[in-house]
Length: 182
Image (cartoon, rainbow, N blue to C red; front, side, top):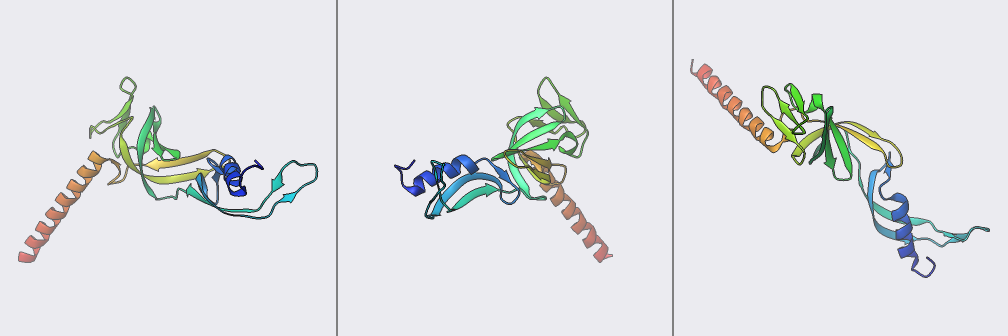
């Protein structure tokens, strides 16, 4: 790559070496955004390359515990569903899908809530909370997610939670008014 400007060849090498890598400090490195500075090179005898100190910026995704994220259900298996969160997938264990007894329907490849009738299928857009982060090194990382709490899950579930919250609030205000009148 000696026929190219140092900045261009540096960007190519940095992209090959860093994009798609998971580190403890930066999380999942999505892309090399900019090559800021390329220092003077040194030559090591017996090596055909030149070595340069390079200052560069990256775009990364570092998931944090308790962070609320939104993604698409990309796979459903008997033990849970996998949610695509941009560069990484997270697992929502079957016990964390909703606050109901959930059964896996193999024929339809979906989960169904016994009492609520809530259905989770591939392609659904959901909101989940990160409950476990295990960033390995290289290209492996695991995210544990939950949708059991209020205002998490599919948009229909969230709308039901909001309606229930307003209904409960109105009932509380009415009973407070009745108490104050007595």
